[in-house]
Image (cartoon, rainbow, N blue to C red; front, side, top):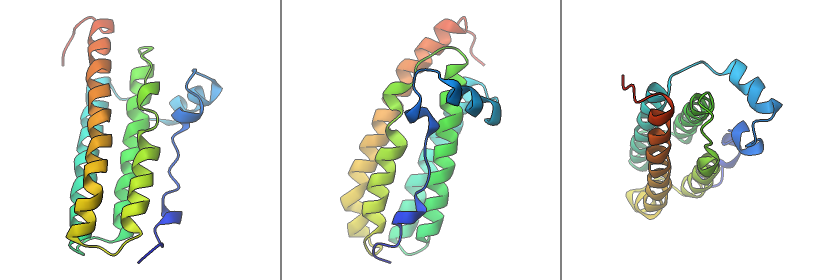
Length: 154
């Protein structure tokens, strides 16, 4: 298993390459489902939980590298939907654009090793820190959203 996971992480966030609202953002918005901010955030949070769970399963040899990769790609898709949802309210998310790349880097390092609880324990603090930083960024952006949306909570 060592080293075989590197090519599987082809996910790329269009958001990171065009933070200024360029035409790339417009094209992505057209192909990304329209989801409201609370639903987008909720779906992203669920995706982060799925990633942590699939990594635990991988460490116990109950999930493959491909399954981890699939969950990572799903998380990336939810991330893009969330960025698009906030962009509809002109809320800049550039401070969290690096999250998918940061996660990919740590996942590649983790999956380059043989599955074990020790390997998971070595890499999970970094995964958790990245996810924590994402959650903190989302908190402040959600406050911006509620102000812009007129305080209407669903």
